[in-house]
Length: 170
Image (tube, rainbow, N blue to C red; front, side, top):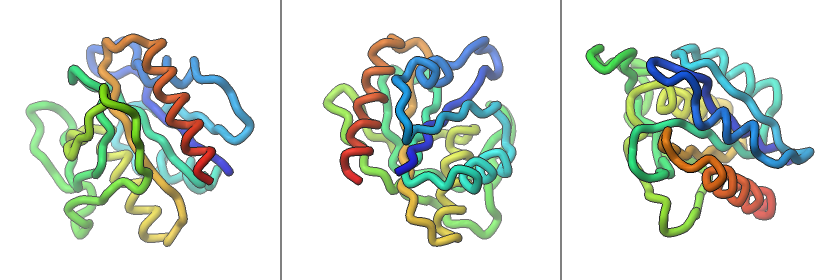
């Protein structure tokens, strides 16, 4: 079984991204593939990794300004290049929402969210979920938003625990 864990590099005012630090700190395992994407609306960067590695499970990590870690349960067909930019659909004829397919149970301190935002995190989820659906792939995808100022050790332990559970389920 192959598990793809992805996150993002620095963007806007952030010189680093907690998701890149979490990924670099995760214990290595033979079934785990890691990828740190640049923060940009570029569909092919996500699809190329999906095609190349053909994972069974995808766990996306995104940095947020929220106060709590959030498990995202859907991606919305919307994007915005900046805070003042106009919202536009990711796919003009795409579904309004696409549900995540990986059930993540992470404990009481983690909240569930129906709003992954309208930036590149949501975009990556939507693009990957759409490709998985269109190609009838048997890939489970989940996504976690981690606050930018969260304790790195706690975040690494949480993500490592979620990955262990994902591997055991298959």
